[in-house]
Length: 376
Image 1 (spheres, helix red, strand yellow):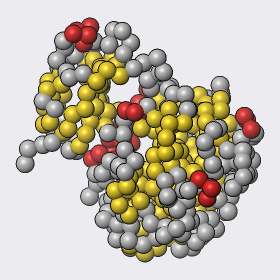
Image 2 (cartoon, one colour):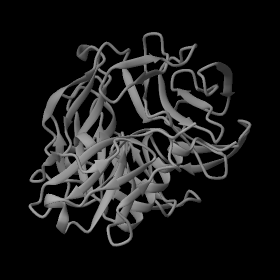
Image 3 (cartoon, one colour):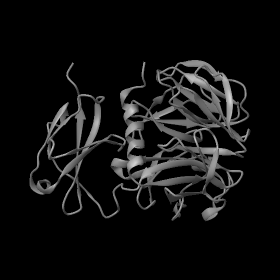
Image 4 (cartoon, helix red, strand yellow):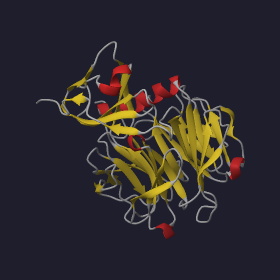
């Protein structure tokens, strides 16, 4: 069984577009943990031209998640004084907009699931994995069992969910429906943070207290220490070429390793822009809409529900040369040139909400929401 189609679109389209276009790197800085300074930093793909992207209304930040169709970005805040909040900011300026969600037991990692819901881990409280709609409404408590100090999340090819416990030193496994399947890894970990599955089916675990990245097979058996000499590792991004970008709190830097675990360089040198404790690394295409671009919500796609959609080149769309499609999280699905077709065939996609986008001659962006719903 393969991972659900929608999840594959997330990964394949994102990384293929990264390989073809420039991108920016966003770094969460946990500062002195429960004490400031705290900030979100932004760099280009070479680790240069850095800037402080967010420094206000942030308290012990943990993770970063962009909602592209809204041009917003979410940041989880672990500090107890913030009532366990996820805050929303303008993705271009970093300006605070509103609280996305509150009352969470210390939110840490966020990750979009194949169901289009945002999965959120809790450091404390009942420790259950929460699911949110992208409008900020709570869907449910997904897991039947809590994981204390949970801080790493990923899915295997069968849709099983895995959550790491920093304080417990283990990785827990849950079924695709949230049923507790027990510990997947119970040894060889001193303080796991980020986890991710490789294409080989192995699970990679950043061991914060073990100053390393460790590799386990698909049954949870220890294979090797992939990366050593990594003090307080947390925050991981995988480049299209397989290189691993990872934060090192012990050196206040962000490092790059090749897929075999060999150190390449410091992408963000120690202390850059006051960096103290990097704990999240997120990539974003730098071609995303600028502040000068605005959306025009107009009707140019018919029907609005179905699996085949006609794009009408009328009015300001007459001069447009192509259109693009994004999913409900704003992640790129495909681009179609009008010279090839004015029809979007969505029959191969999962049912759900999508956005058709066309750039207009005046610099604005025409956007329409459609619902892919295939016939039974």
